[in-house]
Image (cartoon, rainbow, N blue to C red; front, top):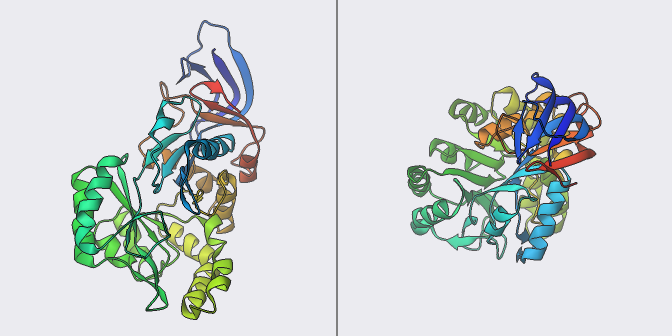
Length: 357
C-alpha cells in the first residue's frame, strides 16, 4: 500500500512541506505513479522516548506478552523510537516486528551491590565495573546504563555509587567499544565526577546546581529529566520518612526545585531530551505528558517538541522525515507547535509506512 500524507508535514521546526508519501515502508517527497490512501493533518516524525524500559516492571523482568503490551502502548501514544535505558529482559525479538517501535538498547543496569531496585541490575563492586561495562557495551545498541547514585542505608541519604578512578576507566572502555554511557542520578554528589570522567548523558539530573550546570553545558552532556517520574518523589519521601528522614527531606527538595533545575539547564545550553521512565513503577504511553511537563518547566513549546522529535532523533543517530528514511510518523489534527497538548491525541500512527493505530 502507498500512503499519502497531506496537510502540514513538519520535517523540521520551520521546514514544513505540503505532503509526503510512504512507499515500500520508506519516506519520499516524490509523487509515485501508484494510487495511494490519503491521510490529512499535521505530521511529525515518530516521537522519541529517550528513557523507557520495555521488558521491565516494578518487580523485574517480564514475559514477552507483557513486553509486547508495553511496546504497543507506547506505539499507540505516538512513540516510535525508544532508547531503552536498562532492562534485564531480552527484547531483540521486537526488532523482527514491523508494527512495533524501534528500540535502542542500553543493556542491563549496572549498580553497586544492594544499591538499586531488586531484580533490575547487575549488582557489582567497583573492581568489576570495567568488565561489566564492556559486557553491556557489546550487548547493547551503543549505550550503557550505570546507576550513579542511590540511597546508602548507613548514611541515610543518597550518595555516589562509584569511585572516580573506576568510573573513568569504565567510561573509557565503553567509548573504546563505540558505546555512549548514561547514568541514573538523583542527587548532587556524583555529577561532577561523572561529567569529568566523560559521561555522555545523565538521567533525571535533579541534583544539578549552579556549579555543575556550566560543566554540563561546556562538555555537551545531555540530560533526560523524566519529570513525570520526578512527580512521584513526594510519595516516595512519605514512605521513607520514618526510617530515612534525611533522604526523605532531600527527595522533597529535589522535587520542589525540579522545574527551576530543568529550565536553568536549558537556558545554559545543556541538551534536554524527553524520557518518561516508563516500565518500572510508571505506566507506558506518557510521552505527551512529559513534553507538557517540559513546557511547565519553562522550555518553549517548539523546543520541548524538538526534544521528542527532530533533535532527539539526531542525538540518537536516527533519521526523522527524510527522503528514504523509514516511514515512521504520527499525524495530528492540530499543530503541536502551537499547543503541545495536541500530542495526547494522535489521529494516525504510521510504522514502516503502514497505519497501525
